[in-house]
Amino acid sequence: MSPRNRTAERTPSDLDLESSVLRSMDGEDPRLFPFLPELLVDLEELGADPRLIMALLSDHGGLPGPGSRVLDLGCGKGAVPLRLAEQTECECLGLDAVPAFIETARRSAVSRGLEARCRFEVADIRRWDPGSSRFDLVLLGSIGPVLGPPEETLRRVRGLLAPGGRVAMDEVYARAGVAPRNPLYGSREALMSAIGSAGFVVVGEASATAEVQEAGHRSMLEAIRTRAEELSQRHPELRSVFEAYALAQDREVAVLSEDVVTVTLLVRDRAVPPAPVAPGPDRG
Ligand SMILES: C[S@@+](CC[C@H](N)C(=O)[O-])C[C@H]1O[C@@H](n2cnc3c(N)ncnc32)[C@H](O)[C@@H]1O
Image (cartoon, rainbow, N blue to C red; front, side, top):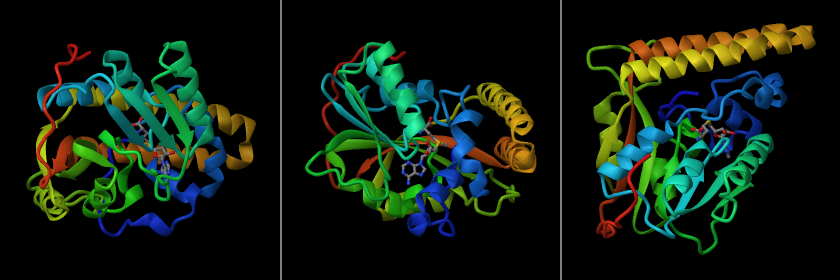
């Protein structure tokens, strides 16, 4: 999964949890759900690029300082929080609806010696209650419209932020002068306006180079195709389901490469002054 746009038509707060997960990963067919962990077993990163996020944070306000609290909503296998925790002394909480992803994230935390600072929990992020917890950084890595379109997403996230907290969010918008094959992708202006309407300001943005994106897409497609074929051999009655998924990924990658710009934005609540920059280690 590639970064997903959150246009108004796709506001799945009323979707059942399996459909929410499937949509966030370009799947439609409910029969696919139990096989997602196996289809994606070779991928640790399920969309967000940890290196890009590290660079973005480092360039705009600094990496999270010691003891900073980081929340990753829809963390998948925890690629981004684990990387952050490895490179800084922050404390991370990752939430995801797929128990197998959370299990993998927990195992990775243990094998990397990060379990004291990285917690991973199974949760539906649309309904999760943070209690009194507040976070210095909230990550929305390639989760698309799970929490609604951008304006609604940011309004929901605001209450999770500690004073001066930031949000890193993956977004997609149409290339200038291109009408995307997927009509759900809106313009850059619409995205920026939605962020402004939610009361947030963009403090930084970054996109991976075309080469990096292409290499990421290629290895993702290859991994999915291989696993889709293996699954098809074991479950021939579901071959069309696995093949349709692999094809949908192919199509989406074509759209992402040709029709749209994928970007990671760093935003903060306009009404709250930025937190002082903590001296942090070099970005990794
Ligand atoms: C494209 S993946 C991105 C995962 C991770 N952020 C990354 O970039 O590696 C989208 C993730 O959102 C999760 N997800 C979708 N709907 C969810 C929900 N309602 N509650 C919790 N997690 C959800 C999926 O299980 C999946 O792991």
